Length: 154
Image (tube, rainbow, N blue to C red; front, top):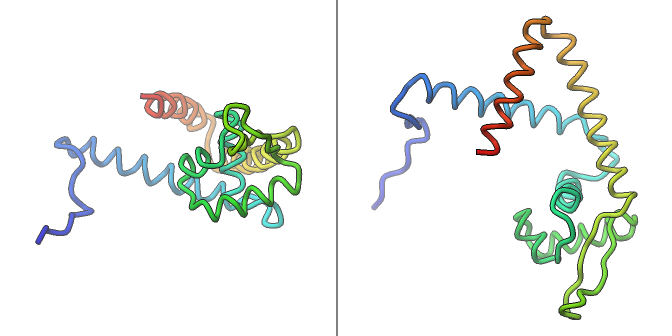
């Protein structure tokens, strides 16, 4: 029998680096959850927004590619695609290479939904930064944001 993994096991031989990794993960995770809470509860849910965002960032996909990329069950994606297609947030066209498949693309209306969602989150974030951080802390956060993007792209 295999021993259970120790979730508190250090991730690095350097304790300071391990602590930094933990704090960055914790901060990014909490901020992500808080910003998701800023979405309009009468609007599209997180799975719909994830699909629209994927189509915006990565372009046209087949339903199978979308399900795999977003780690969704095909049945869940079917419901999501029906919802977004009905609201004209995406288009579905036959795949010219394989008529049995369809290609899903985001529409201008889908882009507008994503923009509104992003604006609402960034408005909240700007207000939180203004209310809680000093000018010096804002400069540090600006630098940290650049560093986090570099780490994300590594």
